[in-house]
Amino acid sequence: LAIAQVLLACGTSFWSGTDSALLYESLLAIGRDREIAEQEARTQAAGFYAMAASALAGGLLAWVDLRLAYAVTAVVSGGGALLIAWRLTEPPPGLHRAHPPLKQLVECLTHMRHRTLAWVFVYAVTLTMLSRIPMEFEQPWLGLLMGSSGATPAAMGLLVAVVAVLAAWLGRRSARLRRRIGAPAVM
Image (tube, rainbow, N blue to C red; front, side, top):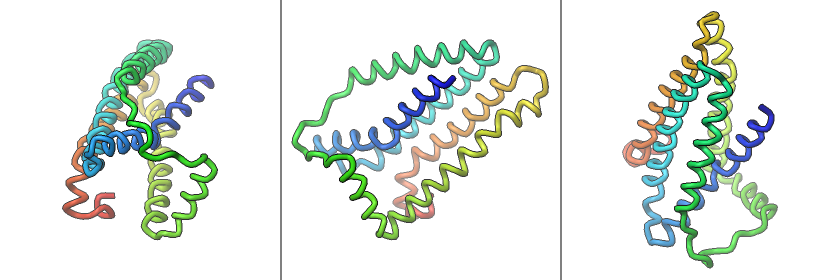
């Protein structure tokens, strides 16, 4: 479990922003950088649909045997990531050179003077906490609710799948909604 959590944290660190930067640089390299919002919404929606499918499958597998869910996750996610990585194409070098990480951090922190960026940062941190903290209590609560039926993993998978499908459906429309009613209203 500890190794799985470390690997999950590593995967999350690659997912949280690196993919968006690669998408933007790839779009910039082909002259389609104005499409970033639509393309980001599309890829996020695809990720949520994949989460829904994996939550359903994982919940059902864990209902049978928890080890089975971990084994299938390792094979499918590892194999899937490898297949996707083989298909990636690096943007051409020379678009711009990144500064060293510490300089990037200092530069990011200096931008926090801007009210809009500070507001988005506080919003993102708050939203993350408000969505993650209840998630930690869902499975024990479902266990109490369902009793000794053993169906808690399947019920949790169904719950996560429903939330992920809703997030994907809304996320796919977020760029259009933002243009229509503005970013604060969408958020």
